[in-house]
Length: 193
Image (cartoon, rainbow, N blue to C red; front, side):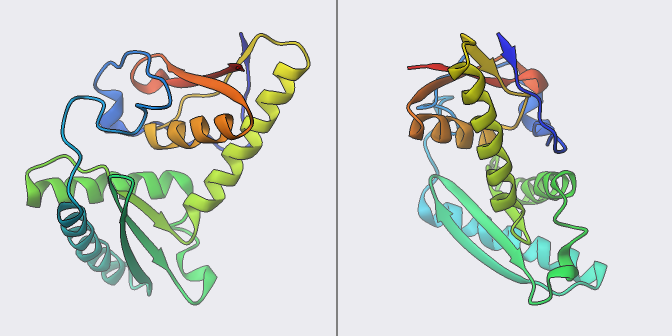
């Protein structure tokens, strides 16, 4: 198996995901309600988004930062985006480790209010779009290694959300992928279709 390492900083797997062992799951179940729970309704996702937006708004006030908050519900998740007219305003908060930490805190705040685990996604200053571009480049390098003769290529560990993005990118390029490992070591392996 060929390992593909990332030149940019790796985003650690979500702490909540690292606690429970997971079986090998294909891309169709990755990021879905694969554990048998029903998917949340749009109303539940909108409520999660509202709670998260209130939490983030308080956080921004404490930090004396300005930001516009947008809430969306899609693909069984609440998405909360924070953007600012001045790009530098959110620069410190848009670093991958910071976004992941704030996302976990926000998920806990939502869980505290709703009593249910939240899979919400937090984006600050376009950080998720930037990370998707990094993942696309990482998948491209892995596919180049496979086309050069490697049987498969393993990517570094990442969160379930990022693995889902990788599965989608791999599928678009005509290859297959699966998630292997458990907890913080959960990663994606790419191979020919």
